[in-house]
Image (cartoon, rainbow, N blue to C red; front, side, top):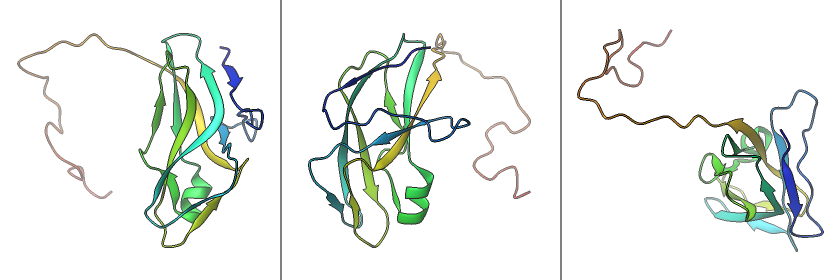
Length: 146
């Protein structure tokens, strides 16, 4: 599979995997100046790139960077971003500061990770009954602690 990437800003950084075993590619902030995110504040950060997936058999998921989230409380405002195969606009990352301290995002900083994955689009069938299982309608935590 080939992922085509177009720089929309000359200062944009092309996404890349941090290690040979990485599942995702780091996305980088493409900013004219620093942006300070106050506690509980949300911001949309541009990456300066657009992508083209080969077909609708693929999707790009945008996930938080674990270090940024755990160490600083900076995570995605929408939990997981979805870049559909037919989207050609700039990839932007919605971030939220869940900490009690200001956090400054600088140009070129790694802000998220992008994972390319296959898409399975099912045929939807409305039915009157679903098959029975051992759990059935048991809710969250219904299978116990251990």
